[in-house]
Image (cartoon, rainbow, N blue to C red; front, top):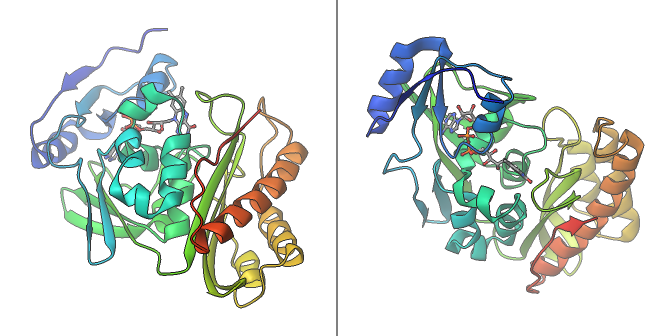
Length: 298
Ligand SMILES: Cc1cc2nc3c(=O)[nH]c(=O)nc-3n(C[C@H](O)[C@H](O)[C@H](O)COP(=O)(O)OP(=O)(O)OC[C@H]3O[C@@H](n4cnc5c(N)ncnc54)[C@H](O)[C@@H]3O)c2cc1C
């Protein structure tokens, strides 16, 4: 199907893009990599009057680290993030970026577009919870910074207001004795995950957990987190029994929908085994082991 007619604008600066979006009003949409928006337009699930192409803005592609804080511009693509120094330092970032779709989608899709879509199956909105990331937004009234938790409001709904753009994603590099793992279960590379799990852990000593962040994706309208599940592990030994208890607690907080990718019951069982696999990889990485690749395909 062809999209409904729209006008197309390509401003050459961030300020001009924000001004245009503000002038064009509620029918206008920013276009970044187009990997979510173009299919939505073709299916006529949205019929914007205007597209403001921000995809070639020069200043939003950076990836840098300053004093232990990582800054990623909204237009950094999944492919560039996958091979960045940030991904080498923080393996959970590589897991996520490399697991998204296929090379074509990764070469065009952006981290800013992914968080702004707030698709419950998309990986960045969930993954960024494990790193307590912040989202920098800029609009006609200036800049503001939100935690990823406050930014993702619901399925396909963010805290962005009219004419506001995501400009940057920030997170701290995890400290010593930390390791993370993000695993999605997929039918094939170009399909969205059936279910995903992210775990970022810091060890106090041998196998005792000092701190932990847990998240499930494609398991409810927004990324699923659970203080209760994290407190099962925090301060305690990372035994099989405790990992099972934590998995049960976070899965109890989830609500995976039954759909063409599987029944809710199947997804709950899948989430449990992904959780244990991700936890074991995260613990091994926290011990300094180099483990690559973390997707599970049917
Ligand atoms: C076949 C296929 C498979 C895929 N599989 C996966 C997968 O396994 N995992 C996964 O996570 N994703 C997957 N995706 C989605 C992909 O990651 C998209 O790249 C991403 O969701 C959107 O990024 P984009 O830059 O293409 O955004 P666009 O499609 O250009 O925009 C998406 C939405 O965000 C808005 N937007 C874009 N940038 C900004 C910004 N900076 N500020 C404010 N609003 C903005 C747009 O207006 C639009 O509403 C898949 C996509 C396809 C086509």
